[in-house]
Image: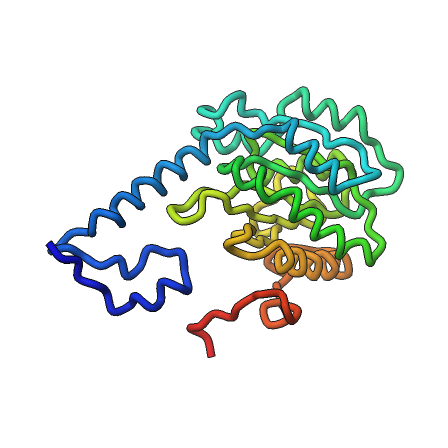
Length: 265
């Protein structure tokens, strides 16, 4: 049976979303159906893939010269199965990790910023994107006076675990790099969450989020630009979250490769 094309076919060059797939009778053609099943398998694999913390620590060391080796921590979720069923456990450190930070880091002067790298729901996203993004961010922060806390890697973690890490490190602000929930077109998307004054018990209203950081999504250059602007304003105004708006949408630097939404005037 012939495939009937969709009039939106031209829009497929603008998005990885599954649009204009055509049809055969009332069903999807065979190739889009097989592609869907492959994408679903890749998304499932991304959720269950363990993070290679040793390799990640080595990658981070290459882009953070002169800084202590990344400290490897774990959330209170003892394994992946528990992590997926108990999000609350992923938001707190386990006792051993809490003790490591509490005993090892007692800064007299608070650090300006702590970077917390968390596997989240896609270790693949962190393995591929964390180190190159941090490299891009440090190029921007290097033009200003920012003191960095020791970098930490948290396995079986959720976004809120960064609040506890930042509080124990004595950081004024924390940025959590986390693997986002895989989609059927993006199993490797990384999210960034900025919180000013991190402490246990904060809600998502206290955070600013930058999503879909990856080469096929928001580039490292553009993500670093957005985060730098938010960090600068967060430090100046001593706040984050719903009270801190992202005003960089129309201010991306020329040559960044960013494309405006074709639906907007």
